Length: 406
Image (cartoon, rainbow, N blue to C red; front, side, top):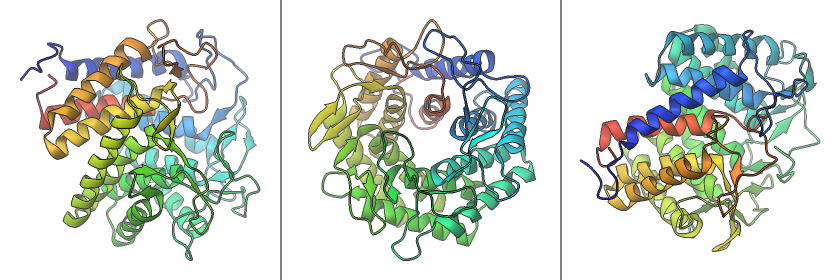
């Protein structure tokens, strides 16, 4: 069934865009040895001496593994790339002495920052679990299980619940808890907990067991009762160890991303009460995000304070997460307004976010739709994970539940 506003085959467009992103990374970023360029600037120029980050390495592995495991583009070429990315991750980022994965390598593949940040360890679990789903290679599952055990041994807060942020190479207390230069140095964060949840969900899907089920239930409880403000339906971002809130900024992208990731975890567990609870939360979070953060042009703005937008720039990854979050809200409710919102967000992505010259998405555009002229197209945080995932999720969900955007 066609929508009233467009004759476009949106599901096909999502598929085409996902393939285009995969091809960009294979053709412009990835190397024959399984490695990758650490930075490519906004003109397409490679910075050969740039460091290589664990987050980017894990997200590359996840992306090509997911393309295969989901059936989105399960080609021999993508399977070979997943194999090479896995071998590179294990050979160069894995710490044989203290276990876990290094944060950052230099261009010679030597550790230049060997800390063990739990956010990054979680992305390793996410990628390894997906690679296992794509290939059935037991070594990947074993390494994901071991990394999960490291998080549980060292980062789990048995007093106040949840997980601590960062550790040294030897898993002792880290002096710098920040995930990035723009983050607060606090004991706990929304961002780390959201991505532990994401990683544990995928691990549980390929390795269901009672202990991991319990950790997922605990994480959902933490998300609902500590991280989510149940009056505003926004996430709090930073906390001390006892869950005292330390920031009043709002991240619209994380809100709408978390809306569907929490429900995905509940669905993986298969508990009807949890599914009902987090389905209702998901819809409320999407409603608030659309009301407060979505611009008239269909783009999702970056940050707010109270009910006011304080950063109107539109970064690449919130657009991707908003697309999935709106389709997910439609699947829950059947309300066409969420499909209309998804259509608007997708139109904004097509018109403003895609770099037609280089082939990836711009890091961000301002409210007038002008791309940032300095931000790289590839660097340790600029990766193929959010946008490829949104293309795959949209392609799958529209096929299974709705023809309204097709």
